[in-house]
Amino acid sequence: MFRGHIEEGYGRQAVVCGVVAELGVPVDLDLVRYRQLRRWIVRERVRSARGELFGGLTAIAAFWVLAFLVADHFAPSETVFWALFGVLAFSLLSLPPWLVLQWVLQHFPRAGILASTLFLVVLETAAGLIVYGEVAGEGPVHAIAGNFRENLLLYAATQAVLLFSVLLTGYLLLAPIVMRSERRRQVRHNPVATAVNTLFQCIELACDPEQFRRPRTRYQLVTHTHEVARILQYGLWRTMPVRSPLAVAELKRRCLHAGQSVEILCAGLVLPEAATRERYLLKTIRLAETLLSGNLGDLPDDPDRAAYTIRNRIASAKRLAVKVAVASIPLAAALVQWRFHVFPASVDVPLLTVTGAWLATFVLTAAGRRYPDEISRFPDALTFLKGGK
Image 1 (cartoon, rainbow, N blue to C red):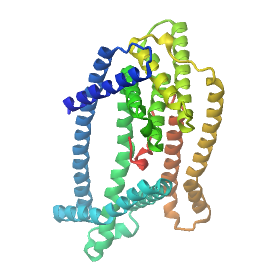
Image 2 (tube, rainbow, N blue to C red; image 1 turned 180 degrees about the vertical axis):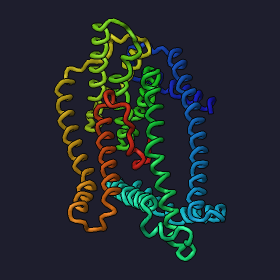
Image 3 (cartoon, rainbow, N blue to C red; image 1 turned 120 degrees about the vertical axis):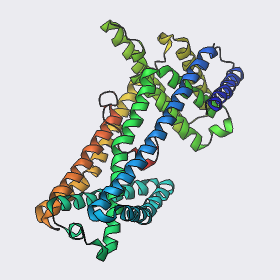
Image 4 (cartoon, rainbow, N blue to C red; image 1 turned 180 degrees about the horizontal axis):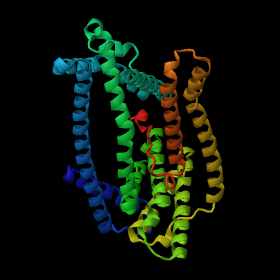
């Protein structure tokens, strides 16, 4: 793994040097420094892969422990057999709908996100009602405890719902925290390495004019370019732990302006012109030279940055308002149930708890995306819906 990533870095370096020679850009890229940063990136990837393996084994162990606990609650004398039965029920009843949702997400992203959200809310609500019924000593699931053989379908559904909901809850709580901590480590511990590596990826993607014309390629470039902009705004200034408040304020200001200037490139990628590719390559190559050399005084500061920033903030506020309004729908439905009692009153407390937690998670996620430096301690708990890191 380590050797493969190192060779990939050498190949990318050759591509970048070829682009520099093709465009005749008067830059002096410190390739020795790039190779040092690339080795750090590779070591971080290997460490992350080991952490993911350990996390996966831990999740499997926790899954089986939960299956045994549920089986022991319903059948203390035959725990092993009914735990295996519960895992089989989980495989047959829970996994197929989730796989269908993943297919819908890939082919119809918006409909898939909505369907996945509804599936999550229904599943977590059902699990909450099951647990609430067991604690309160009432409900259909509590009635089959000790006598579940007469209603195996209900027992199978209970096992499937509890196992799947706990898996999702654990993923929601733990996986985003791990991913965010890994992200923070790369951005804050060595932001130059992450930014330069991403810039070289951008140059490699944009080096071929035919490939650059493809919308998918420009989408990838927008994603990587936005990532570099965030690193400049929220990570680069942390590499200089100086004690002078004036120096820190000036460094933060320049890094913020540089990040906003890089973000402007995203608009050009979405609305390309004949010279967009060449301008983009020139600016990314010069930014890579600046970061490799450490001459932060040469960071870009686009004069159109201020106007773009104002428009971006207005658009972000509108998107945030719409997302919060949509996320409030489940809580509004729960309040209607609490007021008019469409269903039994026993579901009011768990339903309000689940929908309130959902709204809080959604708001913190949206705010964390908009203000990552101020609300960085809250994980992006909805990334699982898109199936990406």
